[in-house]
Image (cartoon, rainbow, N blue to C red; front, side, top):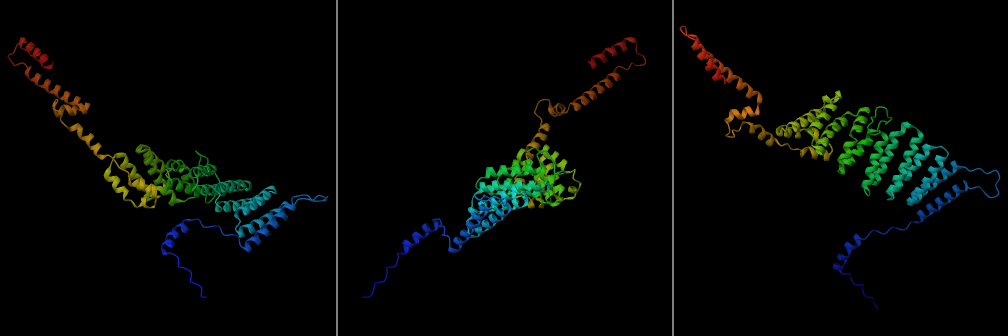
Length: 395
């Protein structure tokens, strides 16, 4: 007998089950035969490396070979990594780095710690990755003080590993990297920051601005400017000068302090020739003098288009209270009905009041002298009466 065909699945049920299947996390595929073979080879290399460090029971002239063991750990780590066993690969790279440090091969140790940190970050373990990047930092310092810039770059990588899941810890790591390169309150003039040392502060500043940590960005701005000056990165330096003033106005609103900051920037002679300097000057003057028209004009400057997005938005939202200033200026000219406009002006300007009184006294003295002049046939009594009248008028 012929078999009946299988019933067709319900179309509506299939459509309903599709989103649920898509939402469910994809199951991890089991390792393939080739991956299992690579894992077995890695375990064999690991066992061979351990034998080189453990003294056999009946051996008399045995000596450990840490250099060879480190090489075997490195090969095992590469096998694990190729097979997709990242956690095991991280462990092997760390073992190789520890042996390299023991044998004073700090360059190799730095390379092994860096590989381990990169794999830990890829495997989704940010805290371990950050810890291993700190080991990279220490290994760089063991090499030479000239590698300080590269060492701090490793700390930046550790902060980047934390910034998605743990932003507060990442902020501390970013600040720590900046403090290690140039101490707070110091300049980069005597520090071996390297050719790319300024990039550490640039990356930290960009992240601080993108996460709304404007005060932290302003705190490291002086050291950023110092590093840009030392490495002669003029284009970024001009943008940084302008950004610092915008940040200062946004955080404090103190136009006087911003003007002082601008005056400090003028000590850089090459900055005077840039468009950013002109925009910074016009912005500070407009904010200081409550010039709404001048502020509107400086906002149209093309210099702001190339700044960080957060800084550009700050500048676009700046406003001044020009109406209040105009009201204060006009209030002195309004007659309040008490004594007339002249008295109001005198009350506003004491010098004007004194001048008015002096003119009045002089006019009185002239009139009195004219009346008191004796005629040709006058007598002494007439002169005496004139003196009395003069005294009364003066009183």
